[in-house]
Image (cartoon, rainbow, N blue to C red; front, top):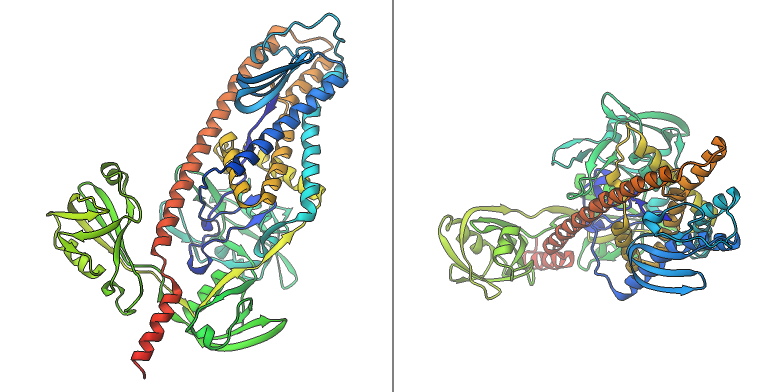
Length: 634
């Protein structure tokens, strides 16, 4: 029998894990490392046929491989095997070959090979009559057959890791090192309050090399994330981590007090974070026309080296420098040679202004969608279309035809001309019914409150940046050992009363299938890496000494050897039934948080869509600046 639950181990997290909430041209860091899916603004891709096929093949295949190990071992030992089932519950499909019925069952939460000689599990697998001609089972048979499922999972993981080794996984360069590239000043907690960054308070600096956390060596940013999040130390101030760094060749041990930051609005999962990002290598991915960058000759693929003599180690650090200085001496690396240019950055609007209308029907946010930018001084006066940015659930329920992007053509009988006039009408019609035309629908709204949200600004000299990618090649033993280490570390933290890892941080079948679908859609190599971890996870979990699991059967066999007598069948059956109920309850509990986690990701996706609606195309801004300076010469 196989138990299928997976340690989420923080496969999905947002920029807040660094204590940073800066966006601009680095909106998606989306890093792909051996055992980590980093999605800062997760998207919920719709299942396509390819993804469904791959999920069935690899998720079902991992269960099949485990059960195949039991089956082949039992056949090799000449044991009676009446059924081989993938899943539990009512049969969807079955076929009998020889003495064995092969089944696909309704609940894909695991599977089993019926071995009545091994363990009496008629309450779960059904009642079978053992033929008189069947070979008597020995203690060795029980141990070998029970262990072979986990061994087959490890073999399967090794085969997949061997395939993945030469292919490599594309990942961000910043995830492959352990050098601090940025230390945030403060961290925003889930309730909105800001606290000083633990890393800043502890004295961690840009350029420090993090070599160990709580005495355990770390080699890359994944190790740092896991070392902090899975930490078990705690004192009177709360969570505690001892971070060992190298600075100027000397080792220092710093005491850091991580803070808990909520990572998902629905599942309420929180992670320990300290507010650091590792060093990144930034290159120019686009140079905007009419911008200072174009005028001084910056080129695509130029690698950022330093700004005003300060080495650039991360986008966040680069953004801070631009905020504090408009006059820039920028050194880039081009074809292996340094190139230094002098230029000025400009303060540009990052987002469109928008307005939040609180009405008797709910909350409605609207924003101007500009065809072009004519006035940089006051974008509210530019010609625009007015569209819906967000709808509260109450408003959506009353007007289900409306959605993000719905076009507003008139307010109070007046056609939309610009955002400024629209704002004026709304502010002067509070508590007065007004007719609004949205996608041909004409609801009568009573506005109770109008809140204007001004545009956000940022500094730029006209380039888009990206982090360099590298191919990570890890040999099969390294892949499997790192996966096993992560799982054991998570188990250790899970049972520790001083850690902040809880059962809701685990991932059950819904979460596994969702993650498999995401990987199948994104990159086949990511899918392979996840299946490798999944199979190592299945092997380890199913060897835990718990009744119902393979490890529990081995433990009972060893216990009988110690006691030199068999445990009564009725006692075994009672234990199995109790643990089966506990196991299924646990699976439902974990799956409940899976569903909430997915719904929380949907909320994040909607926020990201809203953000994307408000983002202004920077090229239009530089076009507007060129027109402005052409028509207003010095």
